[in-house]
Image (cartoon, rainbow, N blue to C red):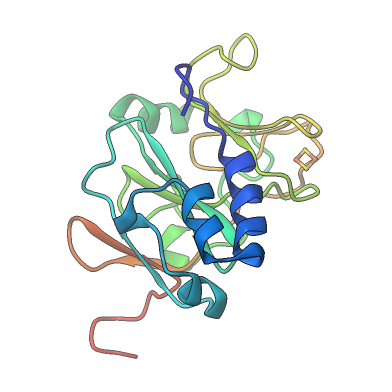
Length: 197
Ligand code: FES
C-alpha cells in the first residue's frame, strides 16, 4: 500500500494470476500477502472457500485476497467512514443496493455483516478493472469522501462500494458470500450456518 492509502492491488492481482499459470514457485513470490491470508494454489484453483485472519488489519486499512480467481477487498472502516455513508445518498445511483449483487445480510447501508468490516469483489462493474482504494478525503477530487476509484474510465464508489451517479459503472461493487467463524476469522465463499456443509 502506498503512503496515501492507495494500493497496487490491480498490478499484484494480475501478476499473481499470471504466476498461477506459470508455476507454484513464481506465485509465492508474486503474491505478497501474509502467509495466513494466502490460500494454496490448489484451493484457489478449485474455488473453495478461503479463510482470512483479520486480526492484523488496522482501522482504515484494506487487504486484497484471491477467491475464485477474483480480487476480494476486505476493509476495516473507521467510525468516521461509517458515519459518512449516511451523507451521500443523493449522489449515489443505487444507495439502498436494490439492483446490485449481495447476500441479504449485506443489503443494508454499510453493505456488510459487521459495520466496520467491508467485504467486496474488487472488480469494477463497468468493464472489469480493479478499482483503487482511495480512503483519504479529497484524494480523488474536491469533495471526495473516500472510497474506490477506477482509473480505467473514472468510475467512483463510496466506502460501501456503492457507485456514484454520472460514471460509466452501472452497479455497486458485488459483495461475495462470507461469514465470521470467530472475531478474527472470516470465510469468503461460504455463508452456511455452523455445522451445515
Ligand atoms: S472498467 Fe472501471 S470505469 Fe471502466
